[in-house]
Length: 159
Image (cartoon, rainbow, N blue to C red; front, top):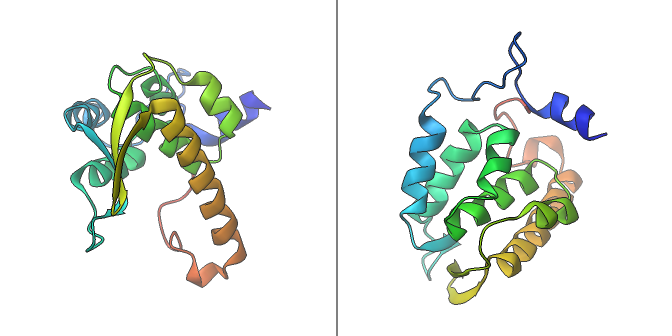
C-alpha cells in the first residue's frame, strides 16, 4: 500500500530519482531555510483581522513546491516550525495521523503558535496532533461540498 501511495503521489523520472515538483530544484531548500528563521507557527488566519502570516504563505509555497519525499525528510528538520508545517503538508495529502506522528523526529521542542487570535506554546507533537485533526476535519468538509464550492476547485492536479 505504501509503495502504491508513493508511486501515486511522487514524481519520478526515468532514472528512478525523485524530481522536485517545482521548476527550481533549489526552491524547497530556500523556502525551508526561510521558514526555519520564523520562530512561530502561524495558522492560515491569525489575529483579530484574520490576516495570513508570512509563515503560512511560505508553507503554501513549500507545499506547492515539495514532493512527498521532501516533506517526509522535513519531519526530521532542526526547526520545530518546519516539522509542524511538514506534518501539515503531508496531512493535506492524505497521510494518516498515526503515520505522521510515528515519523515525526527531532527534539521534542516547544513551539510558539498563533492560531486565530490565540497564541500559546506547545510541544511539536501536540501541535502535530492538532494539525492532523484540523486537516482531517477540513478533508471531510471539502468532500461534503459540491465540486464547484471546494476551495481547491481548479487548482493544480494532484501529485
